[in-house]
Amino acid sequence: MTTRTTQQQSISSPSAEAQARAILTYCINSPDALLYAALLGASSAQILLDTLWQLNSEDTQQKTTTTPAANLDDMFMIGSARWGHRASRHDLEKFHRSVSTWRNRLKSLTNSCHSGLLDWMTHHGDYWIIAPNDPYWPQQLNDLSIRSDWAPPLCLWGMGSQQALTSCSQPLAVVGSRNCNEYGRFVAHQVGLHAARDGHLVVSGGALGADASAHWGALSAQKETSSLRGCTVAVFAGGLNHIGPLHNQQLFQAIKREGGALISELYPETIPEARRFLLRNRIIAGLAHTVIVTQARYRSGALNTATWACELGREVYAAPGSIDTPENTGCNRLIHNGKAMILISATDLHEITHCSHEEVSQARPEDTYSTSNASNESDENNFSKEPKKPPHSATKTHSQDQRYVSVSSKPLTDKQEELLRMLDLCSRQGIDPTCENIVAVMNKSDGKTHKLHNVIHLAGEMELLGLVRIENSMLYPMRQEQPIQSEN
Image (cartoon, rainbow, N blue to C red; front, side, top):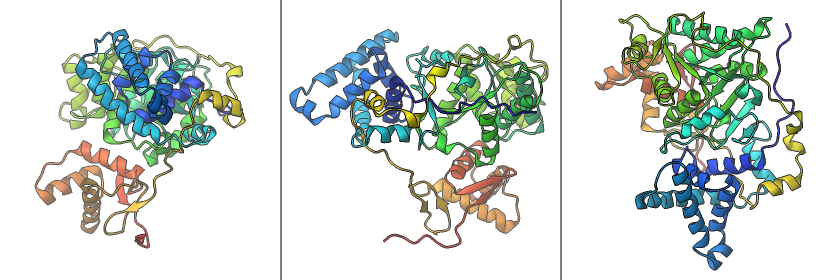
């Protein structure tokens, strides 16, 4: 069978609006309702960005000190009103504090050439960037603005096929615990497979466990001869050059190869900190028409996704499980509390999905041209001011005992050092270094009660930092043969 390859041969250059939104995303560093309100009050992202540039301009500061600031205030007040919220004096003070932070981040871009900034934003042309005015923007994400304390993504970075995002009018999100058992993996895989068989888009988070099983299930449909083969999209909590876990790299390559997409609302170099996963979950819920939780413990990120879905008015289903198995507690509670309907079958989804369909295509060949071939004139039109070279990849660092190597410039935290000590302890005691065993060793060593989900999140972050590797659900420390010598 011929492998399906719908990925664009060349990545289209981001529109001026998408480029402006990408720079604003860099300024805020996380979803920000205050900036989104100002954006609603501006006629375009470029105008809002220009006003911030002006506020940082020495010439403007000397001639008309208050004009740009007053314009920003007007944008915020008007935008807040359009969003259905009357901004108070306290809101305006918060906005002013935020503007100061955005300006400081914007100053780090003021000395870069136009083409250099675009090259960095697209990771040398590897990523595409789309905004709400682009043809492949998933319009259902705009539902994230239904409350004035939420903010939709300003833009999306992606690898793979942009068409995947609009290939299905009612996508299906499949989520569950990273440490789910065989039952949870089976349900996730079967739901992903049968949804894709009917042409539906399958959305998940690219993590270990249920997420990976759902993605692989959708990819399995690509091996079949039916024309009704939906693709799959993975949503990440950091920049696309920090996608993980590393154990799933083969999965991510397969998603791109088979016409799917890897996406993030965060600019390159953004580290996927724990808090970003909760924000990422709102995008999974926003993309979906229906969310299925295949298996979840009492505390699980999958339940956070289900909560977002309920707030957004999405349909939520949960797979019930044995009441004496901790892995099923979260799903059973969702059903008990009336937040989810019972998933009665993992192989017959016709009662909870729309009709089977072929992939929807909105391709417009004239919109596609290579970033590398974009003219200098286009770059000058898209960037009205000259920004500065952004920070490059962080340099490697090491812990105090000089055994461990990280790709982050930050020193190891106490929790990271503790986890590395626990791995050494497991090795000396002949204990398999699974997250469950590590929690047991930690509880025994200090007499405290450590949570499994906290250790799982920490392990995932440390893998991305190059401190550990995860293989067959076990953690192993990454060491250098020779210690790193201090520059001093």
